[in-house]
Image (cartoon, rainbow, N blue to C red):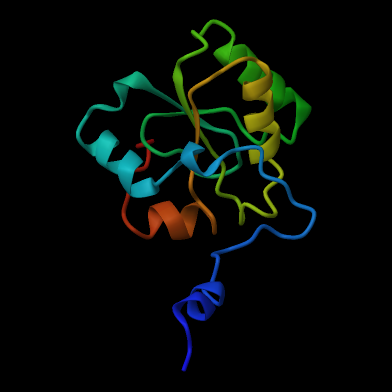
Length: 143
């Protein structure tokens, strides 16, 4: 007979980051794509500042910065947020590849934190923009 403690101890703890890969954000700093898409579709995203900090398509309402692994684009991000109040709701995303391999999200998140921003969210795109945003039909910017 198995005890409840044994079963609990064997429960899957969920996805673990790759060995040696750190995440500077907390779980409560991740924004689910469905939540952001709903906010955009309702027309209430005006209080959010969304930055595309990668080399992927722009979601609706996002300001395109480009891959911040390029120092010029990291400077572009810093300039874009320089005049914003530190409590501005900022959402960043890349979606070029899985979080564990992305060269852009950590530098952007770390820089915004270093600059003193207190309301930063990372759009939760654990696989990529195609799988986690485009395939479900969430809104993209019109060109």
